[in-house]
Length: 206
Ligand SMILES: NC(=O)c1ccc[n+]([C@@H]2O[C@H](COP(=O)([O-])OP(=O)(O)OC[C@H]3O[C@@H](n4cnc5c(N)ncnc54)[C@H](OP(=O)(O)O)[C@@H]3O)[C@@H](O)[C@H]2O)c1
Image (spheres, rainbow, N blue to C red):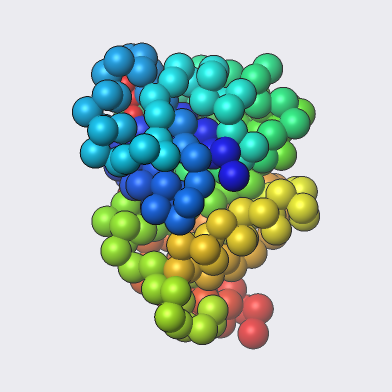
């Protein structure tokens, strides 16, 4: 699958590496332009190329956004129309400044900007080094580390679930985007090292 990545730092760079290892074609992008990513793409191997954010958006059947939350309005909404967009960003007021969520959730706000995209919140609760190191394909799903997902499009969630499982994790569904505060910073499950079984227990899903 072609996967575009907007924001090639800790989270975006780690997922670029993991997706490339698992056989996908990956386009990474940042705010400063593809020429600043040449060192990174050389490290990540032949499946990874650097593009502008807009071109990475066009390239991906699935596109990950992993930018500082305060930059969400820079995401190229037109190029992302119709695409599955995985949103990994978290709102930290100290880093991102004051942002009016107007009664919506963090990813709800991203989805408002990306109207016409199929937004799935995922990979936002896991520290990037754990993402890099804790996937284990040998474990049954219920014993793997949980990656929480939320979204309003069941088919998009299925695609993201398969990607998560292909990296050796298990997807645990927390519901729709309006319900996705359950996986925002400060929530009971945020940044916790939980198996899928433990995660569902905490969420009252077992
Ligand atoms: N770090 C974690 O373990 C972790 C875990 C889960 C979720 N998150 C969330 O994921 C997001 C990224 O975190 P991170 O730690 O990966 O950050 P990071 O290492 O600082 O990387 C941020 C990336 O976003 C790019 N970027 C910034 N503004 C952009 C824009 N307007 N358009 C395109 N790209 C832009 C940066 O490119 P330039 O350098 O060119 O500006 C950089 O490649 C944050 O919202 C964070 O809260 C982080």
